Length: 84
Image (cartoon, rainbow, N blue to C red; front, top):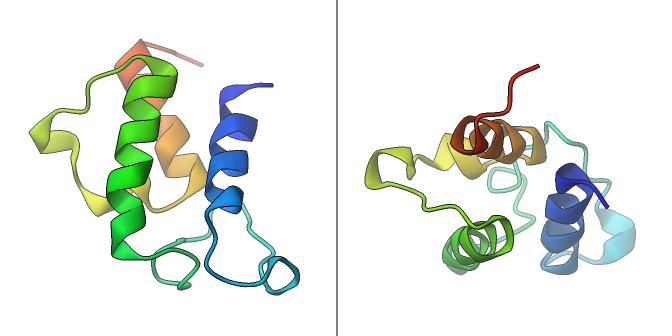
């Protein structure tokens, strides 16, 4: 399973809506759409740091970095030095 699939699976397993109500797209803002709550932000941060063995610095703790699957992957790519 690649990183994007791992992140998507983690988010989908923590949705606060019924599964059939959510059609999560990679660019969807999970906070604006109400798919997750504020407590989920800390859970997501912990998951990213432990699962991908990265340390999220204070200046990277911008909600935009965590608001969608694509934004999370972009953050991980920067942290891991991945270039396209």
